[in-house]
Image (cartoon, rainbow, N blue to C red; front, side):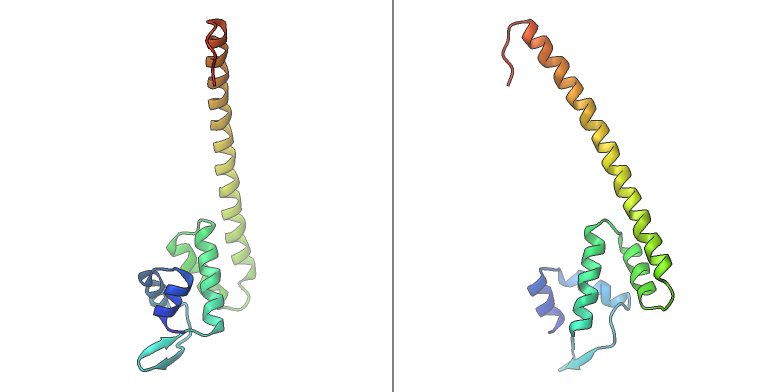
Length: 122
């Protein structure tokens, strides 16, 4: 599969795939008529990259993780990266829950005021 076919099949902008290639995240790969051919291993890497992006890794973090993945004995470092991202996401969830509670508190107070005035609220 060429980079153009991978871009279309997986709905990933061509520029993004080219960026990943510049990072050196793929093997040299086969070339047919000048076009790099993606194999199963490349598609597996691409899937991992897209997962890392989805969970909030920025470009440099993805690049670092993927480079570590190619080295032996880096499992602990990669696990730390994932755990740090997990804690960051949990902190974000906690902050959003606090904001939601504050919002609900304001809504509750306003509804009470409307009830006292005899005005129905939705």
